[in-house]
Image 1 (spheres, one colour):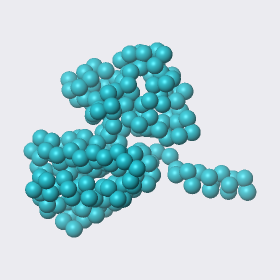
Image 2 (cartoon, rainbow, N blue to C red; image 1 turned 180 degrees about the horizontal axis):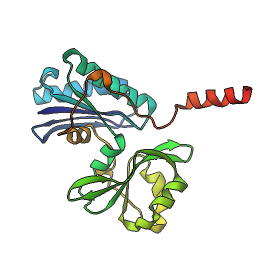
Image 3 (cartoon, rainbow, N blue to C red; image 1 turned 120 degrees about the vertical axis):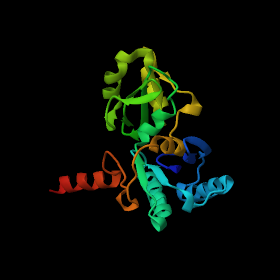
Amino acid sequence: MTILGIDSSAGPASAGVVREGRLQGDFFLNTKQTHSQTLLPMIQSLLDNLGLSCGELDQIAVTQGPGSFTGVRIGIACAKGLALPRNTPCLGVSTLEAIAYGCLGQEGQILCPAMDARREQVYNALFQVKEGALCRLTQDRAISLDELEEACQAYGDRLILCGDGAELCHRRFARWGARLAPEAQRFQRGASAALLAQGRPGEEPGELRPVYLRLPQAERELRKRQGKES
């Protein structure tokens, strides 16, 4: 089975191909260019280098959020655009789970993927690594830094912070032992989405939906203005 994984849910963009259980290609960029400029050329280059065409893909996995509202939409739209001509099955993967997957070698530790959601909040979930697999401890959530610290402090130095909000959390959590994941393991990748998709059933491309966890800023501000006017 050949699976293409895509991620554009935050600052970096990436794509990876898993074939018969083996990671065959992994392309990662963290530049100031927008994902609309980089993502499709990256995927095309990756497939070309592997000698593959879109028609040979059995499944397309994409991080569906949480994350940047624009970035998540670009990733979902890209996956649908590649899948629809041949009705290739698609699978949405939690961005937070994809982040945690990068730290899968940390046996027995508590993984704390955190994405900066601004306003002193992060998108977060907790996982534990057990026998080389991720065990989910919480659902994906938007949570304040104070609430997250209260929930995690008892883990001490067993807690490993990852994601683009890891350094933000570490500035507060380091005093009680929380650790930063190494830079090379810290971020979500399309390859992780593809690896997580193995053995999971896909769905029709049209069924793919983004997962935001909270309203976009523009909609929050609109509702706030409407509330004042009423």
